[in-house]
Amino acid sequence: MAPRFSRAELEAYRGASIPDVLSDGVELVFVGVNPGLRSAATGASFANRGNRFFPALHLAGITDHVIDTSSGFQRDDLEQLARRRVGLTTLVNFATAKASELSHDQLIDGRRLLDEKIIAFRPRVVAMLGVTAYRVAFSAPSAKPGPQHEVIGGSSIWVVPSPSGLNAHYSLAEIAAAFRDAALAAGIDLSR
Image (cartoon, rainbow, N blue to C red; front, top):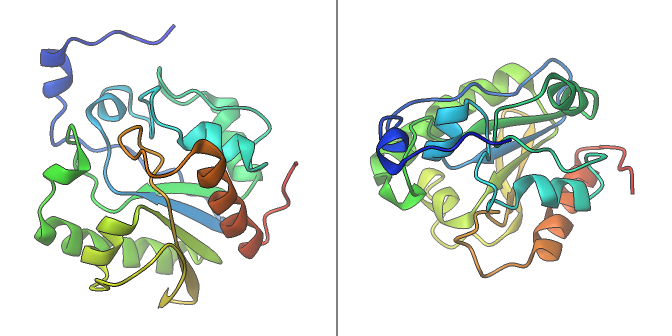
């Protein structure tokens, strides 16, 4: 059962960070904008059950079940991501209630740190979750979802829809299709 947090308890995690899920051999790295307060409280990415990241990952055929991080990561789920050669990181590792609370300077500074991680792990594809943060961090104001001209080291960059429950522009099926396209570009063997 997922732990329950009061608003005050969650607010105590404002500014906290979460660990990356990156391992040797990673080929596809999903980059969230920043952790939410629940993710910071549990120490795991996409811990808010309203977030569609893990359902989309499963629907895309990248995982064999819907991972539930509402109580933190389970060891088997971390092992599955490593076997599937999928990693998770954030552009800015600073928890807020909403990504819109981040400043442009924080997004730009986060891009510098992201570059270092990507150059170290060298995935085929970096999938940025959300076009708005990408436009700011990468100084690409007219960027559209999909593959980008920009690269980090030798890694291709894709912009995919944000899975946040606040992003009503895309359905779960559309998010999963974008994840699937990025996974295929990364050479991930899909289970579906």
